[in-house]
Image (cartoon, rainbow, N blue to C red):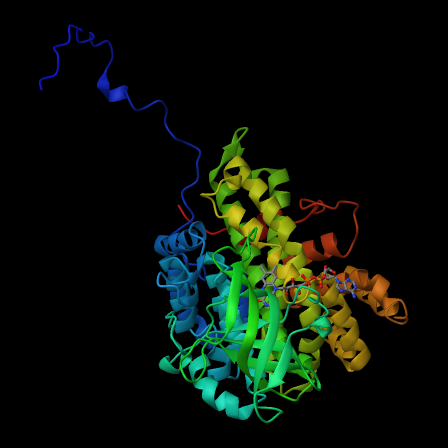
Length: 566
Ligand SMILES: Cc1cc2nc3c(=O)[nH]c(=O)nc-3n(C[C@H](O)[C@H](O)[C@H](O)COP(=O)(O)OP(=O)(O)OC[C@H]3O[C@@H](n4cnc5c(N)ncnc54)[C@H](O)[C@@H]3O)c2cc1C
């Protein structure tokens, strides 16, 4: 059918087509922070790598830095988060499958992490600089996307615990340490590389795992290395598509540690059923789940009733990675904030040149430098566990650092977001993701108070840990009067630890500060060390970022921290 003829006249043209779509020029907006080298543009990281013994990894780190800063890699991080994992209990034919479906970007990031040995390198090539080099790479990778680093960390951290049961280690370790990633939902016997998760937390017992109610029944003989059937539940299990999990459950002789694969040796599905995925505020690219164990087959690792000392080896490593992850979140936030302010003008000059913004940016950069210096020093301690001082230092400095660095991150993320202004709140900027990610490290793997109590436990059980801690801190003695006074006061306050629990946060805060100050005084840029002592060791009454005193060389601190892009 023909359309009826219209009598309407064509309107007379009164304007020029060239201007139809152009209402204004876009000016005073920064270029995207992409296609830059995360290693080459991070002076503090380069210094830490050299200082802590990983100079020979530099060319590898440079190559990885270019990869991590590329627009394509950054895009993977956004895609993995914009497309949350989904969960299917059954396939379309009604078979129970317990399958979590991730976006291809998540798998791509996992592939990169595993092929780069972020889960394995200090175990496969231990020695000078091994943990340091891995930490530096993880630091960059986590800036791209933090959530998928959870299963990377768990797989990395599981090795020391699995090694406590040599026959299980012989079976699992080659696949745990293989530098490849196999995402298929098939029995581990068909895989040459596997991932490992951990399942401790229950509804009634999170921090206090002694309250766990999941039961372990021997399938035949009892004891280390033997098979058990687990019945109960777990309230938090992240990365539930891992091929196996370290699980805490109650055996007759008490809480014990088990290695539980998702599949039985005969290729049937282990009755470990995911109930649902957690609806998390952050860390969304990584699935976390609630699970029921309905007689799931698992093998005991370590002594019966010694579950906590067995799994604590894994937990110590995950806590270390929390430090790297939170330091990395800070670094990415500082990079975003300084980059923005370098390109954005207000009231007639660039934000990065305006005194008040300089105070805020330099303060944020200091926090990140201190977190990184602390983390990388612990990495060196992990590389030298055969030396008594390093062993003692790592034991005490890990809960102190996990507590402090992770707890400093949320406000740091928020303040960095504010430097960017309204655009920093938008979901197409990485800042909302960094902000939502920021509380997670502080809460999992032992929340703040639990870290403080672990600090106390370490000191009470092994008082030499405190001696080692102060011995290390005191290496900066005589370099700064404020530091000397702060250290002396803190040591004095440890003379009586009878009410340590009540005072623990204050003491642990100051332990972290004194160690960070010591490291910066000994190793960092003079402006950084001076500003840190002035602002962190002397109370000026200001509680927010942007409280650096007059005389601070803020421009120098910011210059070190600002990636030069565009
Ligand atoms: C995103 C996410 C993923 C997770 N994934 C896993 C996983 O894969 N596997 C796993 O096992 N767990 C996982 N968890 C659980 C996590 O480890 C726990 O939430 C955490 O250990 C705290 O336990 P809870 O939640 O039971 O809190 P609680 O133990 O009830 O603690 C509540 C608060 O009380 C404080 N507290 C506890 N005891 C004391 C005390 N004696 N004195 C003073 N204060 C105290 C704690 O510090 C905390 O602030 C995950 C959690 C999150 C948020």
